[in-house]
Length: 348
Image (cartoon, rainbow, N blue to C red; front, side, top):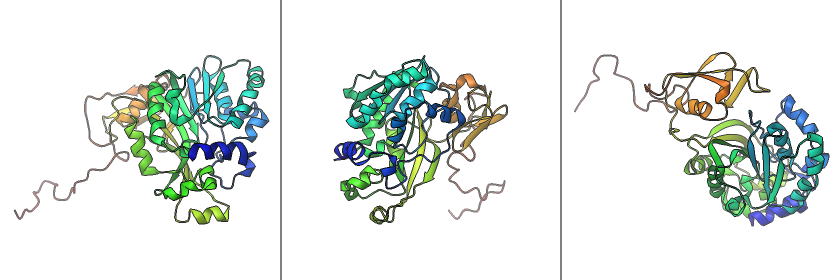
């Protein structure tokens, strides 16, 4: 039902973003200046058929090979094609013929406007990426914008993304999440499914799926609560709270289950275009340019073993372990009372 309903809802029911009944498939974030400029270069028909819920334009992607899962009419693909430039490339995958037709019809228009051609679009189901001509470990970055919630086998998407990424590569995506598991019966409602609510993952289940696929330390970048203006829709999902969230998942060996402290620090050089004053790794790590910034071992690897390495100076190593990183990992579970030098009283 999921794939058939998605094709029908986004190909036939919706004629544009104005037809949406919630703000789940809308982007409310104010884009940075470079993205606003790039968006102005995207064909108006492509922009009119946009249904994303976040901003999936990660930093430092010039020259990267990017895969867009659920590329729709092509807005994100054409934004990213400008960011990666002529040395990079963007591949879009979508299962809705009407959306793909819009994206493909304007390829020559965008190539003429950009001065280079670096996009391709494939018809396919993101649950079955192994059926497409996509080489293992061939992408630097994979993005997706409010699409994974629409598929039934979400685990297969995460597994395939991990397989298709190069070592040190990144899955950077926005989607809809719920504060509890959504009742399976709601999946039969075509509107709730099409509006990205019925298929929303409980955030705890997402965390487990991502880690099972090999992404050991999911990092939340941004999040916002969703508004449901349609009364009938709100009544059907009463008791649930929904959120739009952007996550980044790195394909890195050696990431640990907790954030561990090895006495390390990084200093951002301020060299990423558009982020000269500071770099945001995730919601809890905004790294100001020029200042030494203490990090856990996992954050260190996310910067040192990825495309971000040339933009940072690194201090320390993994020689000495100091326990859980304060304010980042899980606190010591044991009670510290009675350890001030005087043995605690024992009745045994």
